Each structure stands twice: as C-alpha cells, then as structure tokens.
Image (tube, rainbow, N blue to C red; front, side, top):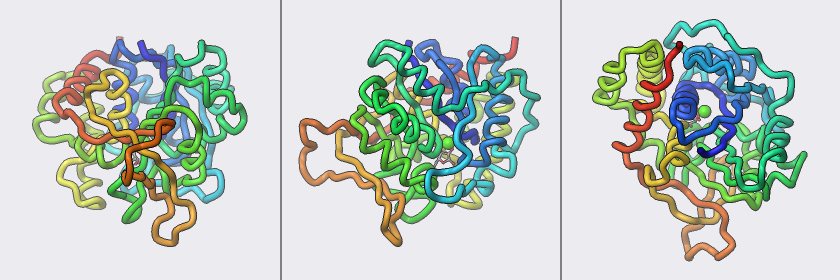
Length: 312
Ligand code: BDR
Ligand code: CA
C-alpha cells in the first residue's frame, strides 16, 4: 500500500479525501495533519477529529499545523464551507485526541523515519505546513516518494480570475513547494472541475445506507448550494479526493509533464500557477499537471470507500 500523509483543511471535499484514504486498502494513511484554510486551524482540526469518529478510526494520528500563512493574513472560505468549515451535518464528538507534536515536525519525523522513497505527501489545503517542513529539514525533499497536491490550475482560477484558493491563500508556501526537487503532481481545477457530484452519484451514495453515507450526503447538499450561489456550478466539484484517487489508481487521470511556478507579485495574477507548455519539458522536469479524469473509475473508488468505512 502507498504510505501517505494527508495534509488537509476539512472542508467538505477534504472530508471525502479522508474517507477515500481511510476506506481504500491501497492507501496506508500514516497520519493526518491540519492547516488553517477553509476555516481556522481550530475548526478544521476539530472537523478532522469528527470525521475520524464518523469512520471509526481512532488509530490514525492527527497533528495540528500552522494557524496562518507564511506572509499573508489567513483568508477562510465560509461562503463555500460554512462557519464550521463542515456545515450541513451534525458531526459526532471527537473520539481521538490531537497529538502533541506539531504537524511540521510530524511530517519531518515520519519522512525521515521511513525508507527513502516510501512516503508520499498529499496536501489538500494551503501549503504552509509542507513549505515549513522542507525549509526546516531540507533532506525530506529527496526522501519523499512524491508530492501530490490539490491546488492551482493551469487554465483557470476560482478565488481570482487566475488563482485557486489553496495557492492564493499562501502563495509563498506554494512557491517553496513547487520549486523543490521532489516529484510533484499538481491536481488543479482543470482536473477537479470534472469531479462533479451529479444526481446519479448522489443516488449511488444514498443506496449505501450507512452513517458515513448520510454524512457525505449532508455535506454534499450544503456544498451544492454553496457552489450554486458562489461559484456558478449546478453540481459541486469534489477537488481533494482526486489526489488520493490518483495514488490508488494512476489510470484515474491523465497527466502532462510541464515546468510549474507560482506568481508572487502580479497585481491581478498573484497566486496564479504558471505552467510553461511552449516547448517539450526539459529532461530534468520534476513537475506534472493532471489533465483528464476518468469519472467512472473515480466515483467507483469514492463510493467503494464510503461503503467500506463505517463505525463498528
Ligand atoms: C480547494 O479549496 C478548498 O475550498 C477545497 O477544500 C479545495 O481544497 C479548491 O479550490
Ligand atoms: Ca481542501
């Protein structure tokens, strides 16, 4: 199984990413780390605790990370995720404690304790924790297997005309992460806007008939309304689980190798992820972007995982 650390800010789609990581046997979830993003660190950490309770998984270590971006003030997204960060359901009380160690140290310690090339980082929120980890312990850059992140977009934005939320919230952190030597896959909006919760998907989730399925349905109903009102979508896109799905089955998406960088100074373009498609990528290019999603494969994975996780 692929050993991963999920660095997230739950967050409706982060919650689905957690379920997929917990419910698929091809993933060995070494720990969950949290980052202020969709809501404050306190709220998203509490949400992660509640989702672990929903999935009946008290065995997975949970570490809280940074409360704010490296340089800028934290901007949260109540219009998309509500005041709690997971509006739409009554979540259970936490059953698992938040570990003492800071997320940044947990990431470093875990990567350094495992064989080189065996731990994958999966960030689905702002990249502050990952950036600090690689600055504090640069050796993790050559030690991680790869970084598969949700963020950015090479032809589209959602928080500005050209920038995506996870990147524009902490562009300096994203700049650090994208310019390290590790193999990196950017699963951006170009891909995740193909992962729409359509009516037939909702039907399949309803047919599972479990507590976890009900939680997902409640979350998706809120997410649908928020995306209708604020982003002009009929069906909401579940961005974050696309990263985990790719690690379970790379055939779930096509990718393209391309040099990537992040704009830090543009008046209109700060936080834009810039992919240079002009020429074939240089031989030493370590970055790639996600292009096309196999929707059927993707939803089969998510729905199987929802069915697999349930409270004992
Ligand atoms: C990203 O921003 C957050 O609102 C979602 O959880 C996802 O990680 C999409 O732009
Ligand atoms: Ca997220």
